[in-house]
Length: 124
Image (cartoon, rainbow, N blue to C red):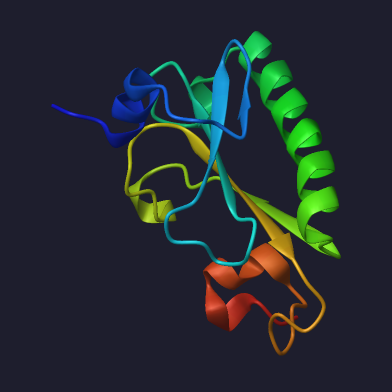
């Protein structure tokens, strides 16, 4: 069965970032300008399948991309999100992290941030 993220890796397109374990691309359906996906080169389902070396490389990717996105888009915040499993909203069963720049006034009330995955629980 084909995997969109494995296919992207095989096609070796221009990546925003690449290291031994990950590559990064702009999301095709961005939540905000600069929305990036950090994708594992190894076909694994979720965050909990990452090795210690991969977790360290993921942190490197996040920090490197933050510097790049700060210079390009000048966000005032970030959301980092991983959907692990179908009930968490995962639709592609290949590890990827959503790295989403946030901006003042990009939504009416950002309070609660990632708690918004269950909208009625976002405000507290």
